[in-house]
Image (cartoon, rainbow over all chains, first blue to last red):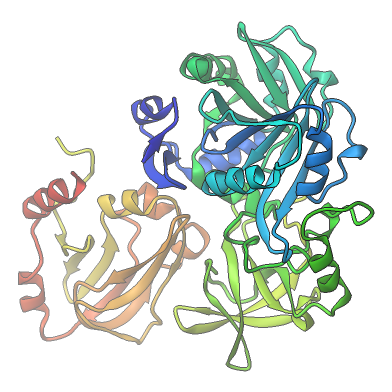
Length: 362
Length: 133
């Protein structure tokens, strides 16, 4: 099991450590996942997300290469823009969902922890003939997320840079707490906030400084459970749940990420999928009958299993029993009903609009 | 000293349920160690009043942010009351595990033998120490 630079800090803070994507990370601190969740919605939370992979791409052919290997048109990105995208195989199945940062002289590509080795190997295999460098910076950089309506005012106490000028989905390269850092006004919670890239050697000191700086505003350290419930309410996909090699991006309703006017690996296969009527769709649903729908639970219509739950829980913010599921396309409409098999018992659910929680960005 | 709370008036199952007998009624809940292991409780699926529960068999389900866990009935009998407060405020299981009872039963004739098979508080405390480390 790998450890982030903050492992001992989490243990000292009473973090309940679990293995996630090969890393030892806190699923919660003593405050508990619900308190942590509400802290992010109302104040701020800090997450150790250093399990995420960070690749650096530079060189004369970096732009040409990046256009080819992911679905978003990077020609639409200005300096310091950040954007979500997908890596696809030739057959249009999803390798990973990623975040791109256009920096001064290079690109930063953020990938999921579980897919880091797979992504790097696949990207490297595509570099033949391109004049570029592709380097895994994951061990030198520590990635943290500071999320919540008070994120800006807290982080501002540790830098002279004017953070109010950093727009949503843009990045800043700046001096933070005495070292060079990158911050993206991005996140995975549905709140305003920053994802921070700092030198791994400064991680512990910075974590403590940030917690001290945010104490008066109610900043809390948050674990994986709160991260999951926050992203779930905002209907952000989690690889392995709403996105996977077995789910095409259109049925996952990620078609908005695809720039059809350019070429990219997987485009031909994805275009074929686009021209066909979708067989199944990702939906958001609310339980009509009280029950917690959990991932992998079957979806049934008239006793026949037709799909499965990809994520589900009782939403802490909305206080409703909600879920996401892959169901046959005719059940994709808002208002459609089906059963979720909860420990074998059919419990009625109704399709509702996504996202459950409307993100509140600046 | 244990980081968990215990209540001397109950007997405990090795699966961390408690039962307290008052006259001809047995009340069932889960221990402080159980609620801590579960993490934040968000819903409790209780048996129907009138249902029969059997010692050693699942009688309810407690849903936390983490997972769904069976509540194994420590005693057999007919359910005469369920704790309606758990519906609106399931968090009381975390806050006051020895007050946040799940259901009450009119025990079956096997009660004495079932209670004898459960642990007293000192034995249970040692059991928790053993499984918590």
